[in-house]
Length: 534
Image (cartoon, rainbow, N blue to C red; front, top):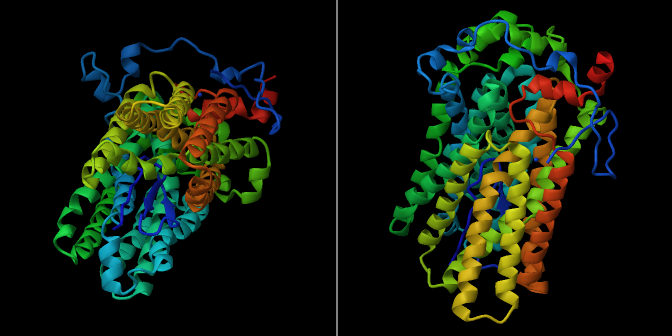
């Protein structure tokens, strides 16, 4: 019997596991003040700040009445804050990619047994693992190629092109009558997901108003949670119908069509339009999303960091070796590696066994508890991320994960009443998943595009996510072997240790981006702008 668990978190990983073959563990995609100067010191966590901020970023009193600075939606709200509303439909359409992501994670959760039986590879653990893990190969290629695509085509067109492998992959998988066909289908789906995981955070960060960028960015995680929950719900008929998996995969193509159609009516990033030299189009988008009073100010900021002649569309990968891009690429890659080694996949794998220890033998119920915990954490992040800030939320999240892991280790290692030990294990597991979903999940994908420059944002995100897929795969590959060799408690203790390390990393390497425009952040981190201002 197969038992699968998944991690329904934003741009973050998930895993699918089997108890039939315990060697098979395949994982799929489940800020106190740091300052920078012009030098990047990898060997030292403390990065000092530039002593002087650019003059253009100094706080000034508005030159026009505050009422004239409000967007139409804000004016009509009579005191209520609805400045996020004009951008919301566009962000919602983009978040459909995350719903698709979550659905494709969960869609293989139960039906893999029926698929293996019908296609003739039941009992072949290598092929069973390959059907699941080839998703990662596609996602790796998709992530690394996404940077060039978004530079050349912009987010909107890249979204639409990216739905082609997602739709074809789902339909090919649904119609598969051989192992080769299901493998190609899964690979194509992974290819599309790899592009989307990079694309969605970039699009939201560039379209959302500065004040609401964090909250709108948290919709990524919520979309993934809802996608996984939907796939688990739709899998219920598969218990009585061995061919139901085909219908589930056909259904997986529907969000792709919705995304293609929705993006036809969505706007492109005003920053990309300005970078591409389409200044009038950029002004029109800014006027519609942020308000007419923001047009001149925003364009001035865009032009302060971009040449606006199309030359910034031709960025090269080798530029990642230059400052300040190398520093941000290092931070992005390190954040994803630490996120994975903090153990989210391992905890989710053992969560089903932990629930069984307290009498929850229904796998669907256990999955529901995990899914709802993730969703609750995502909704909490939606509320907190623009209030508390990314850095504080990230540090608090990892500290909470560390405490949760050490609580489980205590319950396992120390002589306690059996019932109390099991209850502490459940508490630690649920708390770990909740605290992960509050910060480590949503903030990691959001803060990297915020720290990235306009010119290199796509390639920095592509590099960061490739490190995510590689570390995700390595953790999945060796996790069970480590558990068998050392036991659950030492492995969980190492997860707690990595969580503490991630909190320290966030404390000394992450700058707070809340309430700052992307251009303000870029200018404050770029030594060239700082030198020009002196």
